[in-house]
Amino acid sequence: MDANRADLSTSEQVWTHERAASPRSIPQILEALALVSRYQRDEEIYPREGTVECWYRVISGAARRFALRADGRRQTVDLLLPGDFFGFGVHATHAFTAEAIAADTAIERYPVSRLECLAACDPRAARELSGIISDGMSRLHSLVRILGRTTAEQKVGSFLLYMQERVGSGVTDRLALPVSRYDIADYLALSVETVSRSLTGLKDRGVICASRSTRNSHHRS
Amino acid sequence: MDANRADLSTSEQVWTHERAASPRSIPQILEALALVSRYQRDEEIYPREGTVECWYRVISGAARRFALRADGRRQTVDLLLPGDFFGFGVHATHAFTAEAIAADTAIERYPVSRLECLAACDPRAARELSGIISDGMSRLHSLVRILGRTTAEQKVGSFLLYMQERVGSGVTDRLALPVSRYDIADYLALSVETVSRSLTGLKDRGVICASRSTRNSHHRS
DNA sequence: CGGGACTTTGAAACCCTTCAATGCCAGTGG
DNA sequence: CCACTGGCATTGAAGGGTTTCAAAGTCCCG
Image (tube, rainbow over all chains, first blue to last red; front, side, top):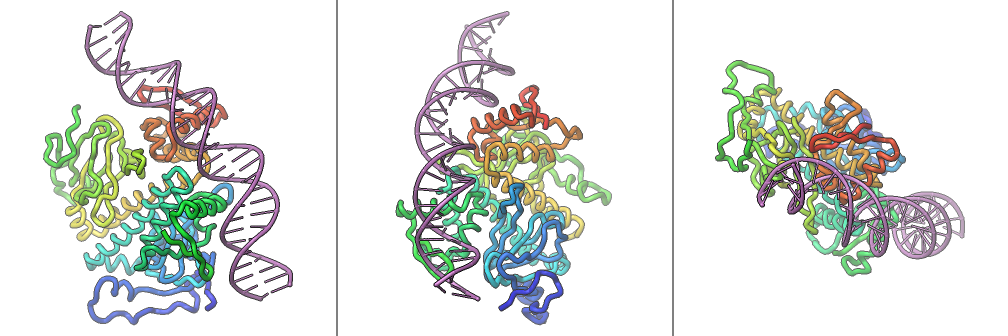
């Protein structure tokens, strides 16, 4: 239950599988390389400017990639949910810091060296990996489009729709936001107050209606 | 001098090199695959939702990747300058339309099939190609950071600094903007008037001082 | 029960957009 | 040659949106 630190020599890391013996699907082969760590809220996963040695994937919880602005506020450039890979870096260097958002966030780690071997040997694996990169690029595209909206209500509305299609847990009219208002504000480059006001504005106009749950808000479009 | 259409069967395409005979550096090998086309201002390079068949690179001029917003305005998500590769798509599909911005823009085209062969055969080439993808991701990161600023003057200021490090033509205190105010506005998600006002605001405060040139503005930080 | 973090609401100041009008420049046609 | 046109850039004023500062209210947990 206690999360360990982000460095590579901690205790809770486990091999999720013994090295797979028989040829399996690419995701399964990937899985066989994975090493799991757990992080607590706001704990660093990797630092900015660090060398890229692993790719990461969120198993449970959530994480962010972010930079600190000149005024000290945090700007989130990527919101990572279960299933998302991250940590590719730019020219083998992390351009942003990565942190866990939720308490008890589980992250898988994949050594880049092994991924490169895999890609060099198996073209299907190479395709899989470039698909993963594509997904990361797609998240950035979505954020750019959201940040490009003019009013805060539009930003928050787009954000909710985007989250809905990402967490998309079968039920289409109900959305459990896994992040706080502060996290949303950092992501949308708005103040927390404006996020809150936008949500109540959308509620008043009947676009969404709110319910409440343990530690998270539920919204319905 | 007249730009041809974007389809694949036009006349002005030329092989920039005969197929290279001897083993050369990776960029040179890439170059050997290139096919060049020329576009006029606002001419489409590839459509949204199209299948990715080629990668592209700006040789001269400039281009944009963009989406149309609900209100009909254009949102530029990527500004392509000479040397920039683009058109990787998401899962083999173009998520945005690409257009030339400048008159007489020259674009190189690289068939994806050949790039894949190259990557499969030569790990150095594969590394080169993933570096190219990294650059594309880096541009998106920069845009997200710029869009994350609060005031228009900050956005425009960040934009100028960003353009300076990108066009970085030796001279560090002089910057020739290769794009119009409208293009800047589409890129920064601001109105043209605000962009103009921000620039004059920065001038008044002595942050930049403006000169004038044929069809382009020059600025000094 | 109290502390602390998160959320919501209010009011004033500031910023951006919109609508409108003017100025500038290049290319065009009389 | 010069007026005209169209695109781009700049500036003004009104209106609306966002931030900031401030203060409650809510919920969880020790």
